[in-house]
Length: 461
Image 1 (cartoon, helix red, strand yellow):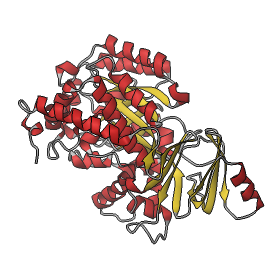
Image 2 (cartoon, helix red, strand yellow; image 1 turned 60 degrees about the vertical axis):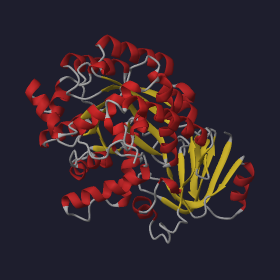
Image 3 (tube, one colour; image 1 turned 180 degrees about the horizontal axis):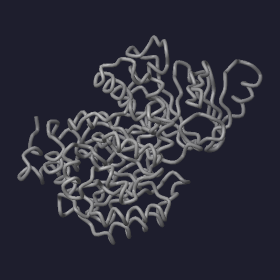
Image 4 (cartoon, helix red, strand yellow; image 1 turned 90 degrees about the horizontal axis):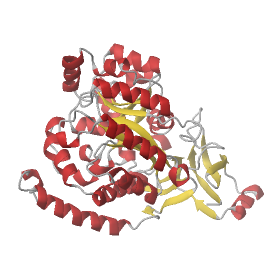
């Protein structure tokens, strides 16, 4: 790793004042940012160039902190585009569950590795993967191995459900908590601290009250993030009301699972009282606008959440309901969805959306002191986006260009923990083409296996 210099670009620090250096530089030593400032051709800058083992001229580029993808399901890379016109319940029964049950451990590795590559190449240096398919004991390790091999920072929320709609995906409490403890023993802090483990109760209609209460104690005792799907559809509210007489967030709060380390994923159908609970307990909301639109789940009250002081971060959600994991694309969807939903063009200016993807994401994963902005002492996680493209340039404001013009194909450089993992738009740690070819071969086998019972897999238009 040693010393690296990124210079001569527009540096968006995303610090407390959203300071921008144009042109500016970022100087890295090992896995930490040492200096950030204005660039000028003088003796001091010549010394930095001479000292650095790696020098990157960012002319025409905008350099930002690594994006934090607050919610995805990497295994769903094998399911994108199977069907683009199904509501959530049908989508689960006819696509997600059948493919999940057919996949083998190596499939989970390949799917996760492609997902990590896609995240890196679209500007995410950190992913929160909610993994809840445990058909083989090796599945979790397959996903984590992919994170390690790709070079990304990864947080695996070990999902679990004792009342899943697909009975073959259910687990007992002993299985769920025993497996999570083993992951903590074997993987927490792996790959020089890049790997973390969280607790991921699947949702509030697929988990018993006893399991949720035990999860609250388990996560609190081990100081773990609790990452839970909450109020994604209106039907989910009806389910918990019928079973417990409580709305989704009310149940989460009553069992003790709502606190500063809680990530409320989606939070589309929350009422005023539930929003107040989130604010008062200091939890974070992970907003996945593309998925909510794709599945027609509804529109989360994000502008109102932000006005209330709730921390809202962004996620792509899984490729099964997006269909990609383009983190830069999510920025535009976030802004546009809420403008049209409230018929207010003044909502969510670009810099606020960028803060959701960086600063707010770092807060959601409890790492504001290390990630989310380009400042001395923070981890050397950064992304350079090429602005010299016909669909972006000329640029008036870098924040606007990033949110409304750029997409994942414009990412030129990604550094994670001081390591160059994407260079000139190409992943440097893995052979991308070889992995894609292996994955396509496996998809062909799995489609043939499923086509007889599930016609959607037989469609080869």
